[in-house]
Length: 103
Image (cartoon, rainbow, N blue to C red):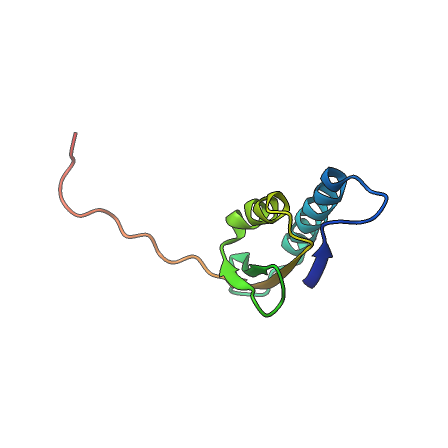
């Protein structure tokens, strides 16, 4: 998903516009996570970018995305650019702690 969302729409309350944007982002993530995983892949991971425009977009972690949208709305921005690209995620092997039993 690569999309520019307007934060101010004539005739709509700004809080409802913000809620609609957040809902669309969550719905997209849920739909992508529901897709079948290819062989050898453990989960869907996401590369995210956020900015006030496509040119100024910076890489952010998925968990910070909704917060960034809120910050932009509070700073009276007129639009936000969000880019979410799904990628394959593979979990690494866990390493057991070295040493004896510590209590």
